[in-house]
Length: 345
Image 1: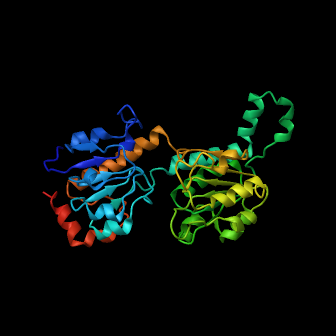
Image 2: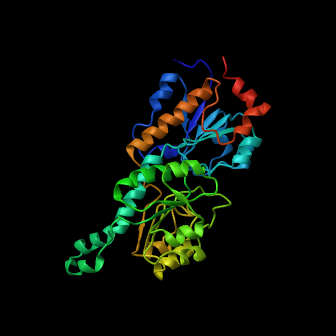
Image 3: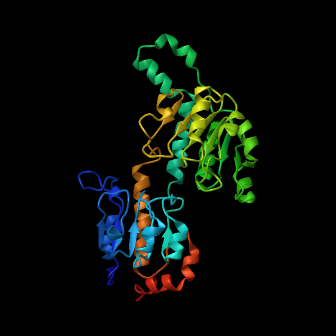
């Protein structure tokens, strides 16, 4: 059904390739066309300027930073609809103070991210990258020195037990592993028990797990959560996997732990600085698997993100509140309600 209002939408330039075409395949832009919602892509600039979002009622960012200074100069803006799950690039308190709703696509990446963690668990356990190099460089006689291990009877430890961890536990059931353990002060104990997971303190998890999988958000509580002290108590045969956010695992500490073999190996998808500098110490290590913050990217993931995000935009354009709101306190603010009422018929 066509919208008859004047709702204006701005889309991140990160959704486009260098050729100006959408680079993630089918993300549901036709839903906006069918709803009669006009949209325009921003100019390619990681730093968003007030003049770029002037006149828009909602924006869909990917990684761009939305600061308090920017939001204070954007009085028309009704909502920020994140193209994904993460929202650490947006000042949440500033959104509320400036009467802007912030929402994300909660749970959309659970399957893709859980699958990618399984992929890395198997790659680390079977030493797949190293065996690849043996074959490429004709080092067949060295194969016996690169035995891996099976997931069978191993323990996975989950730092954070949300949607991704829950899906991961489901996927691992066929590998005959021991009972999973998790650390999360905010987890629902009943949910964990129903999933067959035992909740433990962080130090016990680090001492016990064969795989330590970081699946928690980055915030003031989790920044540098795993540093030298924590890595020192892990088993020397253990592997660490971080697909969450850079900064939760201290990069200097992990570099030292891998170089000095406090732990066996790691897999890292996320970095403090993205992209990292060319001389980043991870790049010189041979017991770490790396990805440029895209290990979970799939065609299905971006299709689902787009459809979920644009469904929220359509609701907003009709004067309705979408789900997965990060700052629900904004809903009671008179300034936000006035902005939303403009689109209610």
